[in-house]
Length: 135
Image (cartoon, rainbow, N blue to C red):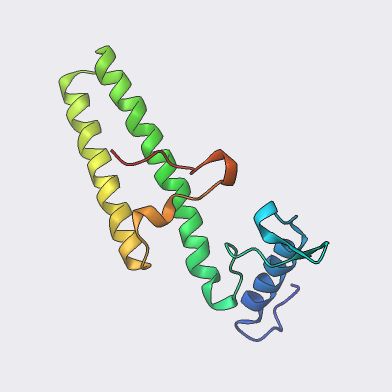
């Protein structure tokens, strides 16, 4: 199989290099372009880090962000079902306990990777943040 002769760690370096190349191909956003004497000068986007030693943490951050988005969506749907009276009391209790456990596990995973729940709220530029503000 291809790549079996590679020393350990070279696959991670290869992935980091591919990610760095992909990010260099992204167009700059207006705040990343500085005017200099009539000519525009591009500076690297300050929000993207592709260092090999941060790839794991950045990937975990992305995965946890998606999980938190889904958790919040499920929580909203559960509240709508409770308000509509679609659930029995037992189902409401079970759903509430499950959502509380999922939230506490998210906090545990964030602390394990030195992240806060606010770190998971990605800035989407003109669209605002990915996750709604915490209540």
